[in-house]
Length: 274
Length: 304
Image 1: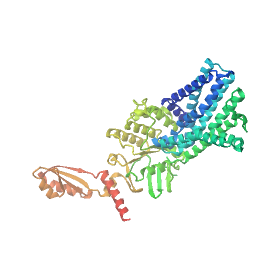
Image 2: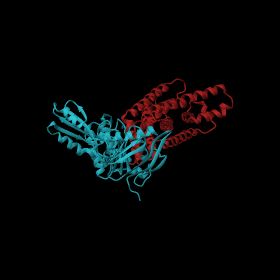
Image 3: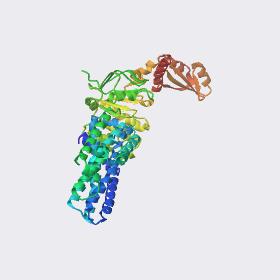
Image 4: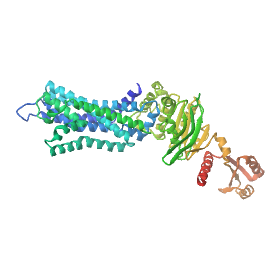
């Protein structure tokens, strides 16, 4: 095993041993099941595919949950090693700093992917078995899971930025909570506030969609909602219909955020004096 | 071509207005054990960090067996045990050691032998969270000794260890030195290092104030010998009068005597004949020597 894979495997092991993976898998599965079965109970005359409704609800839930999980996984990555002194052992060995953080990223992303696939996969299978669903619905579940991992990757990298800038775990933790609040809660509040103030103006038509896609959390939701609209008949996310760019721009946004934040955290790690 | 394990030449480093290291020069031969002594803040850890390439010297040169600090070649040659290291609680000793061996590109076939050597064979599959301070330190030493590094840096390795663990620790260091590694041990626990190292370097406020074998330092410091003469209770006054010195606990007299006058003093004691029942001579301890060198600089500092 080389250095990169041993760093990744160690993170995977730790994720399993500290019950982190188990807890987050259960949390995801539980939320998914509740949302799935509540959404599946017929409310109107038109029967909508239960899986598709579940995915629409889960996309909204994931915007809050997945970034939180990723940030909680990432904040300790470097700051914790600095605090415990193990970073000195690692950096005294012939391992490059880029390898260190890349290994952690691969390990953490695997942990996150396992939790998402098992959690949402189990819930999806249960909904399909008991409430029924279409093939389109199954594809939507798969799309949700894959983009959730992309969303997780972006927030893992953002978490590393916080972790490489802090010398203490506690500081890094506060930092990622701030990131989560801004990206997931405050940003949207500010946008919708502006939208209400100027409902039909230039802001709503031209600036607003771009601001939406510029935030990884919103980009994720936008992509999943617009894909659902083209696939099945739902009344959710009417904003997606009038976008000045194709839906896959949302995926590009996630990718750009992941790469950008990862590059930034690598830069900070290179400048760190352990 | 330079093949010394470590050469530090005229290295200085400041943090703001604090001059952590001033014109420090130290060289090490293969298989040599050096004790790096100094108060907290004397610059020991800073020197280690510069050698490891964690920080860069303001001036001067550091060479590790032909490599610059922090370079791939240097990191392959150096091993390090920081003063405080806390391994992940939920990994076993074996898993932790395997991990560091892989980072150092050493075959993990060596893991069992290494764990056995540091006395952790029985605890190898227990979580590191259950380890005592001594066991953690030995696990750290196991990763530092792995792969016969050219240079081993141990920062305060025995602080907080009980005497038995400390002894085991030093015997491992001796083995490593015997197999050709140059070992630097830093410490402010002075007396525990006595006779464990070939050479002693004393750092004081970032300056090397002494760098020589211990016996040379002892002689050069002119720290006095301590002689304790035991007398019969009724003759202790007489002995004290004849020899000078300080009476302690009613039947002993303690004298200090410069090393060159040792024989003359012993002759004076034996001349007292039956008044004396026994005597002890103690060499100036490392603490005495260290105090001497620290004092020198502190005086200089005050006059400057």
